[in-house]
Amino acid sequence: MSKGEKARLEIEPEWAYGKKGQPDAKIPPNTKLIFEVELVDID
Image (cartoon, rainbow, N blue to C red; front, side):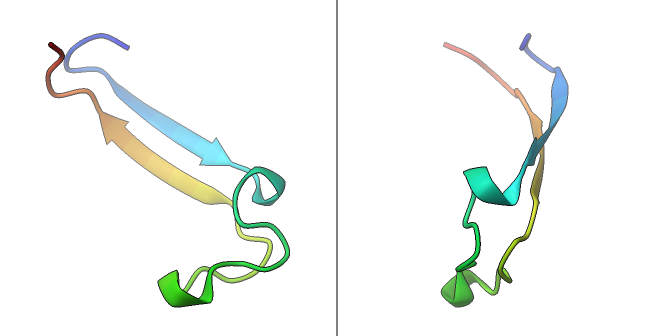
């Protein structure tokens, strides 16, 4: 990524919390995680 660039990351359940989910974070079982990130600065 370059400075100022945005990306969408989609993580399938088997690579995230899988069948158990993450109850403390209110993430149900078999949930795909989606993150939208922006690289603000790099040093």
